[in-house]
Image (cartoon, rainbow, N blue to C red; front, side, top):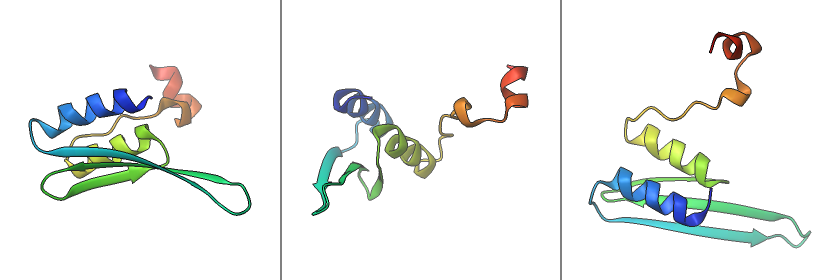
Length: 82
């Protein structure tokens, strides 16, 4: 998911409320890269994750909206039923 796609999804979730989106990339002295995708909706609802998908799913949980289920991690039996 791109920054602009995440921004669009956050705008929908914010429902005309003030909101912000930010991305932070940190490089350690050992050369490891760590990303932080952060979302905020006023008043004081925030979430973050290593990816936009993770941050958006956490935001949906914070808002009481069921987050999307990642079927790639579902047991084989559940995948077959769909």
